[in-house]
Image (cartoon, rainbow, N blue to C red):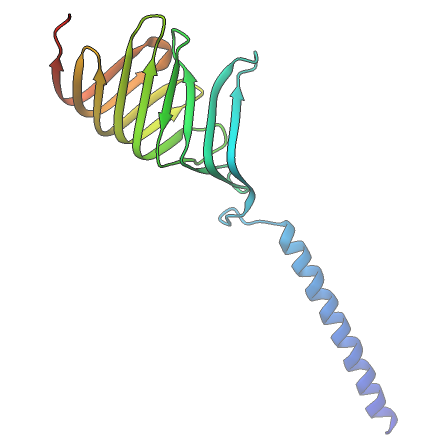
Length: 188
């Protein structure tokens, strides 16, 4: 073999090593950088319970669920079979359940989807109700429940149906927005 063939073989070998090194370096850097649109899961929980507290240590809400998938890029989460417990103005626990929930942004509004049920049972005032709807928004920072969907409210006093509602847990008030139908049960 002549010198030019040997020189070509050595330079091809060096070129192959350099390309391999550049490719490996590029892939390593690419793994650590995410585009804004890329959805990358940074953790996954199964059969979990999370407690969100205020700065003073009081419970803001507790959430239990079958599965939680957290997205690294947005800080958002998807929750399957969620059960949320929050405190009302009279310190009564309100329980919210649904098929699925999503929280697009960290500490943002929690959107509950599919067969949503809200239950309040107060042992102090003997007031209880059950609210049913197909979707509901829960803002844990402002303690607001709302929906634009059809809603049914069942209590010992009667039943109320309508379209859409808004409720601030600190005010113990529920506003049904339209097409309201009420059926009162007589007091004993």
